[in-house]
Length: 97
Image (cartoon, rainbow, N blue to C red; front, side):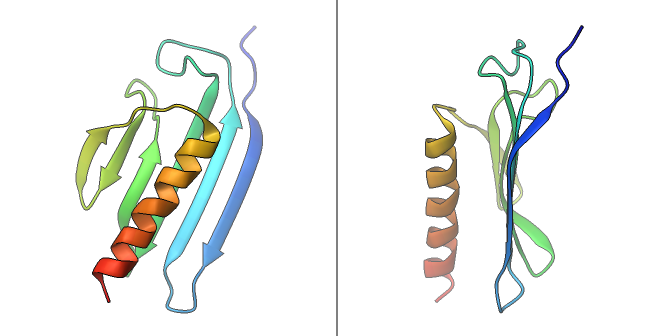
């Protein structure tokens, strides 16, 4: 019987300027596209548009979205994932100054 997804972590921050950073991480059964047993979705939204996204949607494996383009993401750990996500947010914010 397949394991039911278990929410491990959920955080949503809405900045005073309206930017949204949301992270969701679930524990799931190991599979071909989720060998680490995790399903995740991290998104950064500015002006109603996704600027950054990290996820491993069904059949796609680990990947990230940046300004409308999709790239392979080398998942190492949850800590690295969150660090990489916030590093990209900081880069976007500093580029917009």
